[in-house]
Amino acid sequence: MPTSYILINSDLGTDESIIIKIKEILADEKDIQYEIQGVYGVYDIVLKLSSDDIDTLRSTITNKIRKITTVQSTLTMMVIEEQEKP
Image (cartoon, rainbow, N blue to C red; front, side):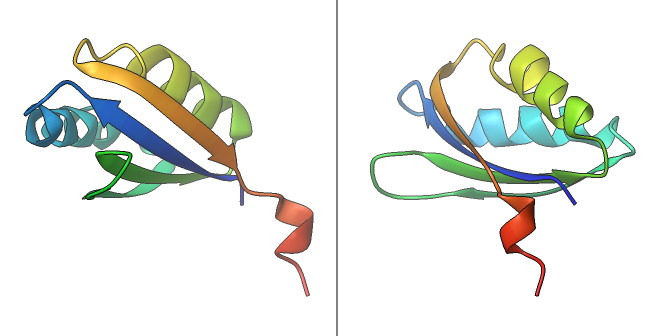
């Protein structure tokens, strides 16, 4: 299953509102499973997205998550599916 990890930098003090907004966005996406956490360190939020459709993942990341105005930057890492199989 295509999976992405997205590391998100937010404007100062907006991480909680971004997490809420992402949860609202993803509530409408029936084909995407997700986990989201606020973290300490270089990035503010870690988001894991999984879907059977890689195009849905890409579209959601590019057209919805990156468009949140208080998101400063993102780093997206796509899992190499071939390495997941035994």
